[in-house]
Amino acid sequence: MTVIDLTHTIRENMPVYPGTETPRLETVSIYETDCFKESRMTLYTHTGTHMDPPAHVFAGRTILDQFPPEQFMGKALVINCRDLEEGGSITMEHIRRYGDKAEQADFLLFSTGWEQFWGKSTYFGRYPCMDDEVLDYILSGNYKGIGVDTISIDPMNSLARHRRLFCEKDIVIIENLTNLHLCGNSLISFSAFPLKIADCDGSPVRAVAWFD
Image (cartoon, rainbow, N blue to C red):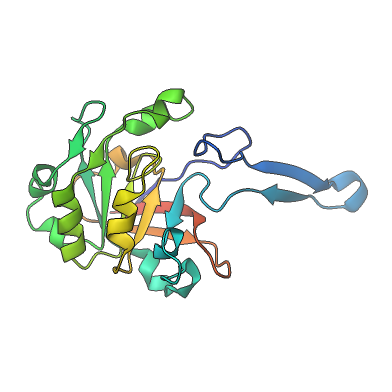
């Protein structure tokens, strides 16, 4: 079995959405005096590879801890969009290449290759985003979630796509994925489990794919 880690490592001074504070990792207990090591971690709920629920943008909509655990695992299909240039649009043509496999998936994960800019200012630039037809397709399906290897499914300083997806549909969005290009073009097993935090608007996840 091959297991692919799709998760960026949480560390101090890592890329975060502009205006967000970077994580703080502070050692509070040490081996020499306490006989164990323990750390204090301070970070925002949308740090690194993370998950958004509907409550991220709509008051009164589903919070992350209301989802059952099966929401966070299933079959995924990685959609190769790495042919797109800066500012390009993910279209239905990218999805149609996979035939009926896209309809069999629980998660659609869009691989744009933008992870190559992780840690650079370019990462927050004109990354590819899905167009309205793709959003309509996702809304008409029964997907548990979608994922991208960019900072957001929306262009910077916009939440329009989040709002369209989350207005009435109970779905999750996973952002800042990595290594999607290692997952092939067939259906794979996938999981992205968030921390179980009360009244949660989002959480870092450990996203993993595996296949024989």
